Image (cartoon, rainbow, N blue to C red; front, top):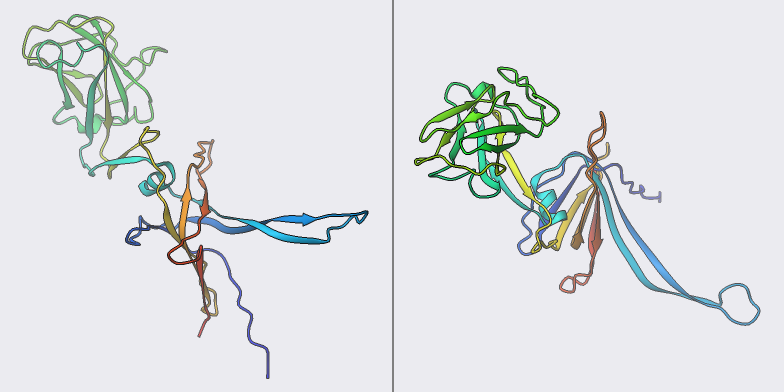
Length: 294
């Protein structure tokens, strides 16, 4: 009688967090750098007399953690591990301008006496540039415009900063009642309110701009009402040449926080840590399935 073949786990294939309420997945991490389950016991040692070594030792508690490095950042990553609220904008072949709101004061965005709206100028969609845009009131009827980034200033007609203030308007734009005025080389126009224009100097408003895109996710982190959901996770090792696989189902886990590195010429690779908790209904913390190749 020969010995049976040893089971060997190799690599990692995927990681799937799922909802504990119905076991439906949040999504799948396919670009995974690795994952490790660590089950570490704390011991209570008994010492006595002149003996320098313990007479007895008993395991007290076991810390159970799963750590993983994921090389992509889907929306559900932020929902599960940062308690974030995610809202999405559908893909647009022309671009998107939205979120127009007063930031300082209340006179800049005003349907009657200020700026009523911002919108994409028809025929100038190619000039749209990504960024958070700030519009500052210079006088009761004029405004200056600032961009928080120049990452797409080469889109369409080139846009340039006027000075170190990050202003992009060489001269203030005049806001006229019920009339659109273009922010030069941005693909955006501002339409004045329906009444007599009379804004307060120093007030400001903001909006966001994006060129043609495949969809936008706005992720809000740090709400006072945010929670970090208990969830399950299924990790699967790579399929070996002999067909063997290892599947790990973590039934109850909680994770909170991860780093987002923005470094020169380096991909951002979040590192996740989750605590494995005891599932009283299943009477376990995890289930391992070893699938041997046929």
